[in-house]
Amino acid sequence: MADVLTVRAALELEVFTRTEVRVHAGERNLDRPVRWVHTGEIPDIHRFLTGQEMLLTAGLGMGDTALEQRAFIRRLADARAAVLIVELAGRKFASMPRAVVEEAEAVGLPLVGLADEIPFVETSAQVHEVLVSTRVKQLIAEEATSQAFMDLLLADEDYVSVVRELARRTGHPVVLEDVTHQMLAYGGATPYADEVVNEWSAHSRAIHERHHPVAPHAPGVPTASAASFREVVPCARQPVILRGESWGWLHLLHGGVRPSPAELRTLERAAAALAITLLSERESGARASQRQTALLNRLLLGDITGERFVSLSLALGQDLRGRGLVVVTARAGDGEPFKDGTLARLLQEAGWPAVVGDTGDFDVAVVGLPADSDATAVQTLLTDHGGRGGISRLVQPTALPLALRQSRSAASVAAAAATAEVRHFDDLGALRLLVALSEGPELRQYVEDELGPLLEHDALVKNPLLPTLRAFLDCGGNKARAADALFIQRRTLYHRLEKLSEILGIDLTRVDNQQRLQLAVRGHNLLRKPTLRRT
Image 1 (cartoon, rainbow, N blue to C red):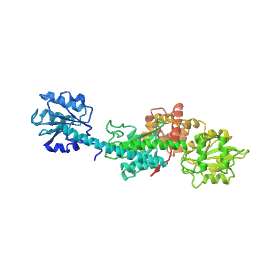
Image 2: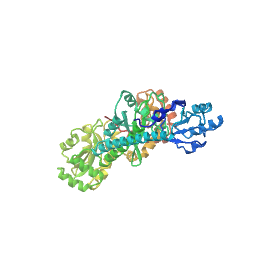
Image 3: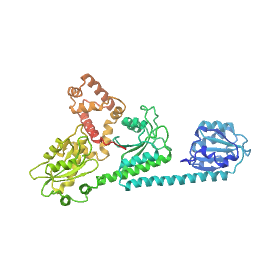
Image 4: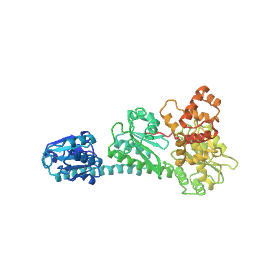
């Protein structure tokens, strides 16, 4: 059975086979949903309608003049009636009035005439029976969908599994992105969806940030046509809300076929399941079950103190007592987590006791150094082996929670760098403030306010201008040095800078404007997370 009862389907019910049924107007809208059935013979029947009703009448309240009849039809259309069915058995009309047909066609209201009388009470009963049966089946399907996502949560699956399940249940490709429009997962791949994914920034920014959903019957469907901003496949988008803030969006790439209400409800349930999954990942910090990872998780959660962590580390064979401690948050040079315990092996070979665990995004290690050492030795070790990450200050056990935050901040800066590097917390300078702001919506909003027009421009062109702006700012506004750094002629640079000024609406020669853009560019670098995971 269809997800909703349409006017077309309702006219195929048994009660309508007892007479001749003719569609006089509005045939293009016969697929409108029918939510209820109403009967009436009064001129102001529209006052009792709330939308999507099938209105049955003998025509007694439609009026005698063409003017009255046209007004009657307009009022029904304004009340969003699904269809008007008029009995033409002679009680009021023997044929459909011409004014009624013309006005119904003009406003798009489906107008149906019945050649004979039929019992309206039976019509209502049959329609209501279908509506109730449809709703019961919807509830059963929704319960099965909710249970499927609940099973994933109970099995401790991550967001990739949720994306894959959503794609399987809807039959449409699905993309999960964060607030910076970076893809995190892609499920149910198809050739046309691959084309969208290959130019994801154009789709995500140009379509969804500049076009709002149509209301109210198709939430999440952009009003942009396929020809807008190139040939972009339409999709439904559902926000993933985490702790009252938008963490990202789920995109259902439905192509040229509008998603059904059931598919949109499945999309909503998937977004809710994702929020729980992501909250779990934030709180626990890891997915692995090894003892050292579990111990690090407890420290990350604040479940144990730094002193207790050192005590429990001894039970795992890692003696951190009487040593200076540094926290390392690192990845391999390619941005992926270390493989096969590489980080633990490197620290062991250096002779440093360490508790090492996989926290999902990074490997984290609490390293014990001799009293006469400093964090420089650890930084050198990771750099020599092509690592990418951050290192905290040397601390005592009581300050381990603070050191965890320091290393995470340094690792965030290193992750945004173009090449692999290992950053020490003390070397971050003003970037420390940006990293702190990146945990909430403030930095994202600042970047969008300052760079939004430029990012939209770059999403739709082959030669983006953001690299030129970045080089110009890195060179302190020196045009000659910037041209050399970009390997272009100065005249070309001048043209690009004029274009940048036009897009951003500011004077790039002013030092204060350069400073605010430098913060925005660095913030944009921090917010970009190359963590695409394709299912």
